[in-house]
Amino acid sequence: MSGNSETTLMATDRFRELVNIIITQAQELNEELEDKIDVDAREDAPLFGKEGILKSIELVNLIVAVEQAVEDQFDVFLTLADEKAMSQKTSPFKTIGALAAYIEKRMDEEMDQA
Image 1 (cartoon, helix red, strand yellow):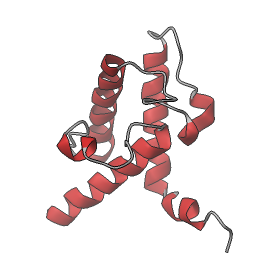
Image 2: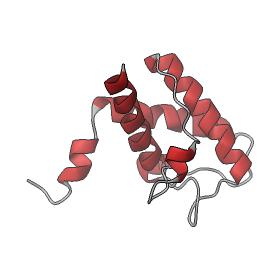
Image 3: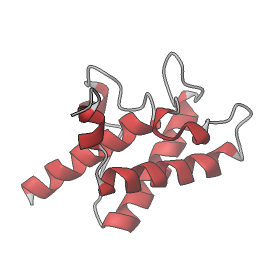
């Protein structure tokens, strides 16, 4: 097994769908941004934080659009920018991949509670 088996395990079909949803929403947001999200970097694209390019309000706009797209695609309502997200050791908003992994985790939690 290769050294990056954790990444391989994370790359489920749903994870890839979530990455695509986030990229689609980021592309739409890019139309309004002076500094663009590097969607070609896919899950490694920085969003927010030290290396990210989004300002707080731009991040909020992206999150709201992603929440709506996830609800439309998966019929799951999630609030992504909440205390749970803010209390994470590593920000779920750092990169597209981190956000997709966080959404997938939250979806699993919602399904476990149902």
